[in-house]
Each structure stands twice: as C-alpha cells, then as structure tokens.
Image (cartoon, rainbow, N blue to C red; front, side, top):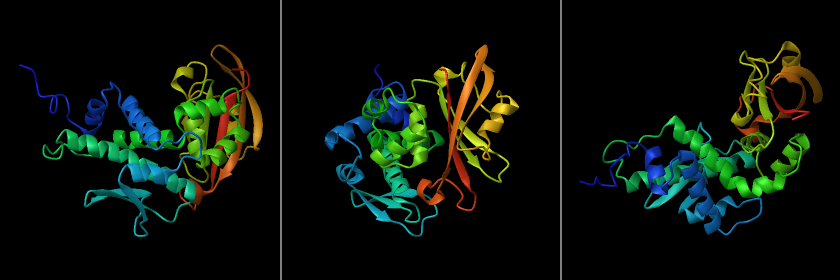
Length: 277
C-alpha cells in the first residue's frame, strides 16, 4: 500500500521544505525557492530589491522598535508582517528582511504538510542557518556573484566592492566570498577584549591545505591574525606538507551596520588567503 505523500517522511519544517522542493538536501531546497523568487521578480543585476521580494511573498515590512532581535515574522489576515529592528543599519536590515522571507518558505511547507496539526511546526537551529543562506542567495545570487568575482583576488578591495554593489554588510560579503570560494580563503571576526578571540569560516574542500587557523596554525600565523596586527601582512607556515605564505588583511567593523555584534566591543574582520594557492 502506497503511503500518503503528504505525511510520509515529513517530521519537521526542514524535511517538509525538501519534500516540497523535491530536493535531497535542505540547502538545495532553499536555494531553489530563492532562485524562483528572483526569477518571479525579474531581477537580474545588483542591488536586488527586497521590496519586490516582500511584495511577491505577500509580506509587508515594518519597523519594530520594541524588538530585541534583528527581526520577526507574523501572519496577519492572510499576509505576512516582517518586523525589523530599526536600531540597525540599512544593509543589516536588508539581510534581516531576506532572512525572514526565507522563513516564509518554511511556513508554506509546514502548511502544505499539515505540520501544525501534528505539532511538528517548530523552528530549529538548522532552519535559522538555512534562512541565513537564503538571505545571502536573495541578496547575492550564486550565478550573479560568481560572475562578479570571477578572476578576482579575494582581498579587502573586492570585499568592499561587493558590499557597495550588492548593498550588503561587509560581514555578509566576506561570508559569501568564503561560501563560494574557488581557492583557499577564510574570514576571521575578532572580538576585542573577549576571551573567545575569533570565529573562522573556511571552505570544506580546502580543509587539507587550509586547516583550522586556531587549532593548527603556529604562533607566528596566529600573530598575523591578531586584532593588533597591521591592516595587511604576511606570515609563513607549513600546511599541506609544504611551506605556505599566508596573507591577512584586516579592517574594523561598525556594529550598527553589521548588526551581529555587541556595540560596546570593538570588532575587527580579517580576510585571510594563501599567497600561493
């Protein structure tokens, strides 16, 4: 006896999204829905208009001064309402709106598979991460982004250009460079005066030649990555069985613009790459 496709193998919002998209991975599913939305709004060049996305998804964006988070999503009389914290800068707001729009994909998948009735309509950390990926895809679509950075060195000049052209924060631009990298590169965010000194993101396909910077790198490389380091400098280390030259470029971040950091703690972003990939 064939099982009902509406209920079989759907036990969460993430699995519902995969089933609705007919994709094996949740990442492929969220990227598919984002790609469809971009095409439906007929947008081809950056910066991408988030108001067009919201309108197509039957959502309106409002400031929520009482919010202590970046944004929230509510449903009201058949429409979605995206509340955005007005204390953050425009670029952070753009990312927040697209993050909440990505949640709408999950909401609609949940409805399609009756998850609320089965008490399975719960948001998870996985969904939050996927919505971050969805926001990046809506603001910096893979095809457009890869074409824009093709043949370019992943340095601060490129990062600032991406931030300006796509109208995104420098953190979002740096993370997207890493996500779609074709060469070893990492982004390091330093929180001055805090014990957990940094966060590092590095492409998995380069794990052998570009291992974790903080558990493998020798002291001289860690010094290169220090928040006290100059804006640009080099260090030498042994990685992948041979000597490698590491280039580290740093710049301060404005907490209001970036939106993810304590405004009372100075933050530095370092973009790190191999000089001889």
